[in-house]
Length: 577
Image 1 (spheres, rainbow, N blue to C red):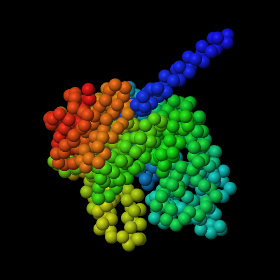
Image 2: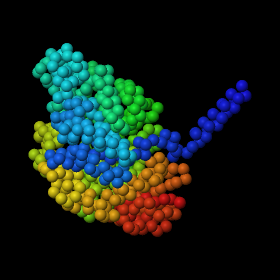
Image 3: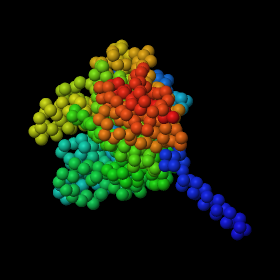
Image 4: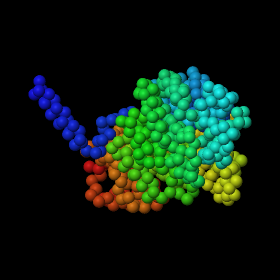
């Protein structure tokens, strides 16, 4: 028996050594999952496709386009909220988490859409908005009705007899995050709009309500959850004074309290583990440790998160620099090279269009620069997120006057700028460039009226360039942005090295070209991206034996020995023999 025991111990030690000797680029090999290998497509439902002529997109519109979505090569869909809502913040103010807003259709329509995704091998990720609710939610109506109501502690209240509550910053309200309510002579907290009161996650009853909501949708078949604004959910209810100017480091002061991790572990046990679903956090805290604490597998909290550093570098027309772009994405990749997982994205419903911020929207360069950016997204380590319309290079819309805006965020910022005496001409210039309205214009399907989005009056005006930028035209062009996107999703799915392979930056200081390799076992790919509108060259020491390009957004490629010349916004992926 003793000899047998020693044999087992020796075998285990040998196995342990073998696993430890595996090269670094295989660290994630042991934990391959569908959501790491997934390619996510985000749909803003009210702007995607309208079928009943009311000017708002609906579930039947998505159902009508299921085969198109499948044709993109994506494997996951995240859809923005469609719950019952007064729509103060386009659905991010939820009045009933188990009901669907009639503009989108019925629960039967939702189920048909979900089944349609699943029949095509596409997973569905639900947007869960539980940092706050609508002030029209029954919980809040009850909560504000009296101080001794059972729902009072579902939200954060400060009795007025104690004086003004300690200042808290609101992301949407320039007057701050406390709103006076005369019904019970008290203030309630709202991190976003005054119509979006923050839920009290310190109350276990609230947490149970949320888990029950998630179970409700998991049992309907959703495959994952995107946790909106979740890093702000936990609050210090002793309400200490924060130093003046603290709001400039908003995430540091308002996000990622230690107690949040206890709640996430509880959520993991109650929902994620039981239903084998996926969860992604909006935001990753203010440090790499914050992010790891959210997503490392041994933490048993969430599966992945996305950070804002990538999109934050391009929020003004001053533009970003390529060196900054390289530094941000290289630093985040390095931090998650061996443990944890993150998302890769450059646009979503809270940002202006990808090509305007990172590429070149001019008619001459819009196609190659969008193709180049999509190549970047789909060749990095991390789960890539593509926002609807970026697969055809939709651009910003010109809205120079504040009266044209419907977004509560834009209106709040304008109000704050006005109160601060800012130069409103300059303010509107920046807003026109950076507003999230730019990313919410109706999908451009064809060159018919309203871009084929609706037969009625669209909720938001269609970009005037739709006769030139639309799906139908790009379907017919083998060299279009759309067809390049399809080629690139195919390349990613056929080459696990682009999912799990080690990332290594080459020539960090090159002013125009972003060059990196992806390596897995004996396979190595070279990615070359020209971020400029001029021809640029790079000499790659120690590399000269290249295979045929597996992706190239031009018909030619200039290689001489180890020197590669790239045309404006050219994007190529080469095998290194």
